[in-house]
Length: 479
Image (tube, rainbow, N blue to C red; front, top):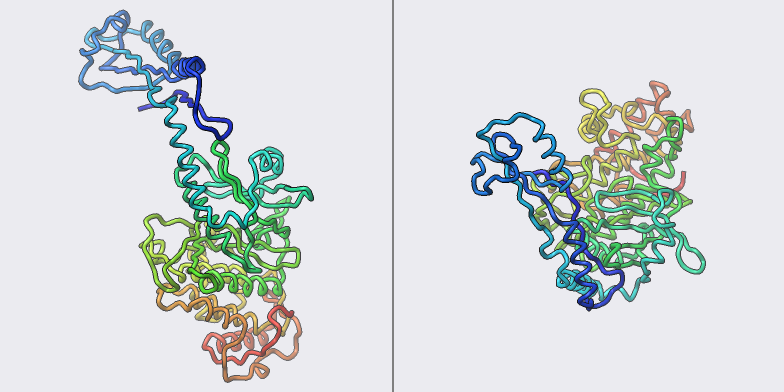
């Protein structure tokens, strides 16, 4: 069937019980009735001229098709058909159908308010810790959701920058799509989870807004530095590459996000699986401190390493663990895999999926795995970066962590606390790396380095991958 008509319904402007006077109700119903009339056109083998009006509704040919169209379209169709030659055996019937049943029923408004009240009850345990804003405040803060206020968008949401309160504090406002039936459930889950998280590497939720007409809103603290996606893969005007993130900042991001994931898995009363760890959901402060955001897909699990099956696989292609993508199996190891992909992006500067790459290089994980085994360093590390000599420890730690995270078998991936130990160098090893480090250069260019330096670096990283390198207890963020 082809649907081409407007359906309208009445939605209240303010929260109130439905008590409409009979006169107004009749006027509204009459108006909606005109909008909700349609013509049902049944054709059987052709069309008729005078027969169209006088046709017996029950004599339509058995092999007919139905089309819903507007009054104007039917009139146009009649005019065209009257000017054309049709078979005498064909017949066409036009039936007027009233489709306004239930659309103006006041009970439908009651159902809407009951859903809102149910949502209010569900979030009541945590709302006392959050600021509640009105829709007018939200609209004013975002300049009526102007295009210039858009920070980003997801599958079912937009994120706007806004200013709220007496001091015009900058915030990030997430607006959920009310057209989606899952939005209230997603809003409730995200609000409940995000409001319970308190970690320096997680963007805090500060407020919310529930408006039956305009939608559901979550208000997060604004992080001024932009997303990791922008630094790794963004482009400036003119098509040139975006600002390059230094190695020191990349290592700081790796350790910080590992700490945030560790907090989600082991630092709260219930284990939280984020399910959407990726550079666009990692924000950087002005000092390049990373902060994990967007808990729209986050969910609770019974306990760390206790998987459960999810009916619908949601997330971003390229970051989905094999067992999750293929079987809907979710656990804390789902986040570990996605974090491993982010580590590969920090190391290589590549996107997880790039169709423009050559054969065998389109998928970052598939491309990186053999290189990790062959220690082909000059092909692996981001050619835009120069690595200070003292950062080789950090490089080897991140490579070792990435290789562990992207293991295809869920049971073979370490938990996030082990990854944090790898990145921070808290593991106990037996070989002194001072004899392995290159001695003649204080700065290593991964694109143009001597054959001797490359060989020494590969030997160092090969030992690191085998877990026999002794790490210094240096400052994690010192470069």
